Image (tube, rainbow, N blue to C red; front, side, top):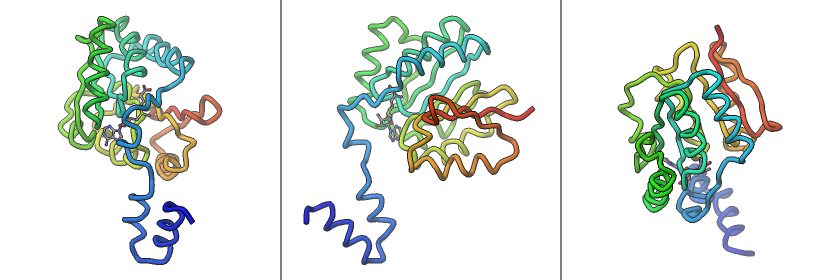
Length: 196
Ligand SMILES: C[S@@+](CC[C@H](N)C(=O)[O-])C[C@H]1O[C@@H](n2cnc3c(N)ncnc32)[C@H](O)[C@@H]1O
């Protein structure tokens, strides 16, 4: 029996389910060197979404090294907008900032280092596009935190929507008659819009 299966067995036989579940699952620091980025096709679709709908105010949860943010920036160059993005791991955020400067789009991107629940807590402006691409258990709390800033033409782009950790979030949003959900990229992405 390896350490992981011992730990799982321990969790199943104790009352510490919540603690165990969190501890057993992967944590952001386990991926401090991993890009985990959206695909090139997704990036091009995001640019098209931004330019076709003239989206200006973009918020991203989960910067990593900034691949998705660079696509978002390419979109807002055309619409005159800007991107706020947030990353928990400082070393990743710093590398992303470096990447943005080298790509010449640093002035279009505001990088907030820390837990998105804190860095986006005092968000003020309307959100035209929210990209959810951080840890899935925060999709719902972050959505709820930013929901007051959605408007009738807002888009919420949910990456990795097919992952088991995102299912509860998708289920909750699907129950809400205010929202329309469209599956893309064979279910990897769900695009949420506000029903008119
Ligand atoms: C899937 S990766 C993002 C990939 C990136 N959007 C791209 O396409 O290039 C998810 C990132 O979310 C970050 N993250 C996880 N929990 C976070 C939190 N609470 N606040 C901010 N960032 C978080 C992780 O450190 C990780 O770098």
